[in-house]
Length: 125
Image 1 (cartoon, rainbow, N blue to C red):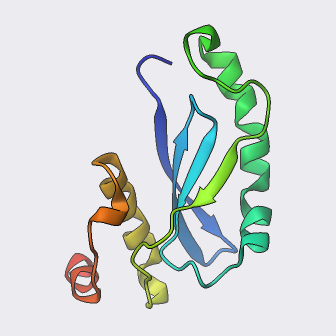
Image 2: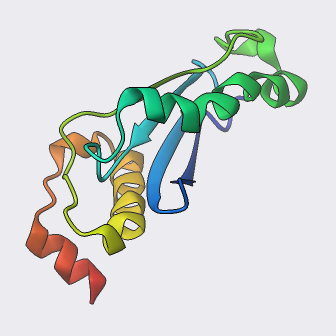
């Protein structure tokens, strides 16, 4: 895994809320970029993410040259929601905001870049 360390993708929860996922293949963890963190508690998020974190290590082990990485073996990946992100108050914008979070994550720390209601409104135009 010399070339790829982090995979970015989106995930829909309960057919209503999009979140961004930053999956670090070497370290075995998933960062969840959640634009509406108050909508679901950690127990519910665990239910949404459990099958993903439990199975990710299998394809990574199959494809990667694990001896060259810090790969954790066949243990489930760990996850955490990144705190203090913009809290989206409009249900219909969560996909767009999730994609913006992923873009910001690729350029560094998404917490350091401030999104506002007005910025999100401008993104929707």
